[in-house]
Image 1 (cartoon, helix red, strand yellow):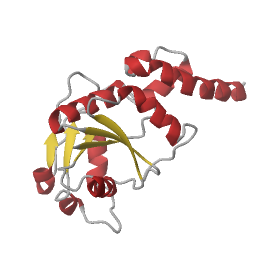
Image 2 (cartoon, rainbow, N blue to C red):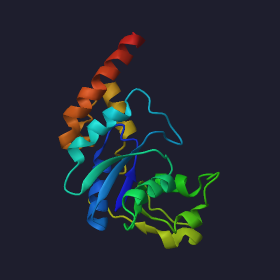
Image 3 (cartoon, helix red, strand yellow):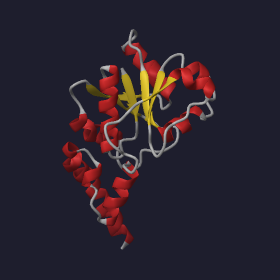
Image 4 (cartoon, helix red, strand yellow):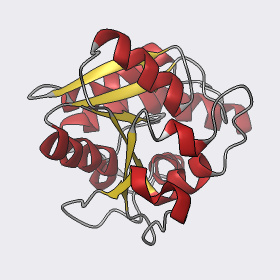
Length: 194
């Protein structure tokens, strides 16, 4: 089973590609939203709204989950309670992998020990990830069907704010849900700035 922790603010074609590649590789993929992030806040789009935005991507072996923990090891340990016999992999892009392997894990084991409990599947994102030698045993490459270097949730929000086309950056099945959730927020924010 593969876990894809993300903010999904909003879900993008890159998230969809990661979930599909993880599903193909691991047989099951779980889109994980932590209740609290270790490096950012939820902001104006709630956990519940983000779960609703994920709905079009679910099914056929892809499921949603909410994690009490915000770090990979915490999420993996929660998954093991429900699926004790599963081999667990955590999916991310190169940029997230670089942050994860250098994170200051206060009160938790260092990455060398964490990778005894799970594997990381890392997709290229504006370059390939080069795992440090001492971690290479627990990190594999995840190949995506397509190029997603320029696809990000931040870019979707920026393009929406600027009135530029953004629909091509989100999964086709999610466009209306993203429009429904984000348009009122952008409208009220722009109205306040007038």
